[in-house]
Image (tube, rainbow, N blue to C red; front, side, top):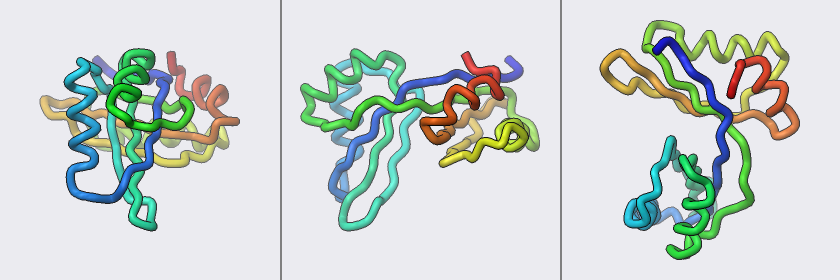
Length: 138
């Protein structure tokens, strides 16, 4: 596989910035057999953290989150990138957006092992359609 870029739905939740909060949420989703394409979490200040979930199945995720008492904000859109790992792989993706005059709000990229990498990135909601076109996202 060379590279694939997919437009995805994601959901954010605010939780206390305490030990075990992410583990509790992820365990509840796993118990409901919810598969995540990506997950990220980070502190937002004032003793809070944001958890971002990118589920394979949004309806199943929302139902499981409701059952687990995870209050998620309305659905938003991001992009998942997967491909063969090589120097500059994510730089080329970001350059396509820069060349299209699109600012990236945030990006997380990791080596996935066995010569592969993955990334998730976000742009402003008003630029999702333009970004999808620039990236050739499905």
